[in-house]
Image 1 (tube, rainbow, N blue to C red):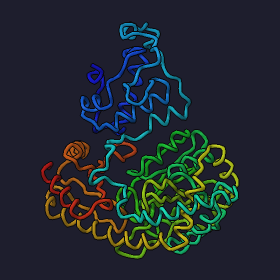
Image 2: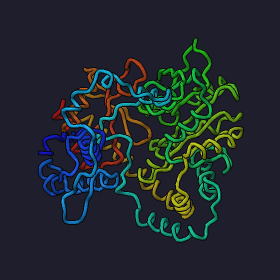
Image 3: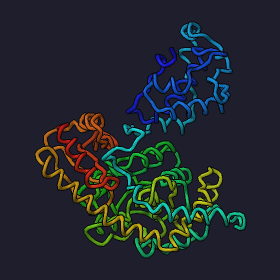
Length: 476
């Protein structure tokens, strides 16, 4: 029975359809499901595995496209390839075969070593951090922008990979809202903020270079820089944000989130920002400022971007639309110091970190027509109320267990464990109960000094937040 050979994990980072496709492919490739054998119908296999029929249909269609199956309407799919060895032969592999090692490039090897663990399920659950509420996005307006972009595509000039309309709209918006000083030609449009970090690392990092990052901080930054061969050093935090540690060799690059530190939400003081700028030699030390959720400030006016204080062109400014709009947009942007614009544009094309011109043009219209700012104003009000609702619920019902740090902005907050350092065990219990959070210790670069929970509030309505807090109470 084929279903007995398949083990799907609903807490796995991969979706059920991807897991099923991978396991069926492996069973066919190793000969455990032989050539000419008919698989169960999608309805039967879905019932046996306890998954939706769409999950099974996806797997069958993908394997048919790859040539593993022959599928036709009304008939069960049939295996079309010979795996080349039976299960007995597979179990009798020689010592030489068993000891074989996959030979990866240094870049891929370091990336595998530094990739951060993901415990999230495929389906979004309360209170997963890092997400806005896609249900509140004006999809009808966005769809009109997309349609107009598609209709005009035939008349549009090919132009540069970074569309000028969007670059100009962004330059105006960033100057007005974040104090960023940049011309449109300094702005690059990329598939994500992580793509911006990969591009910067590819251009600037030589193996052995010293890179400073916040600790705890965003794991994707450390992963990108380590994969390029950098020596990554974690810098401790205090109430003013990232600290400069004495006695360290000068860094080639410094990565920071000064407007809303990830994950603590602390805002870097002006004095600390000035200190980092003064100690960064132009052309020798570069600063990467990630303003990942800088659109959302609730208790005071937003602190201007560090990039706007830089008079010597040494700060990269990274942003994303996935938090302010919806993660499906898949667009980020990078403001590049003037001296490096032409170099990074060449690197962008050769690495292939190019965003859809169709989406870029639609987004330029969405911003120019005022829809982006209107959406942000509405979301600020909603997220502000949701932050306060979560804080009130945690303090009232879990005040003896958790110490809540109330951020001045953003889409997530930190709740520290008062009497325990076992935050990863707490996260496991919560995930099993249906509440997704992240352990603060998992974001440490080395030995964890901070223990607590990173909780998202932006993506969840107040009734959903209340239900999640009640679930949390039952887990402590």
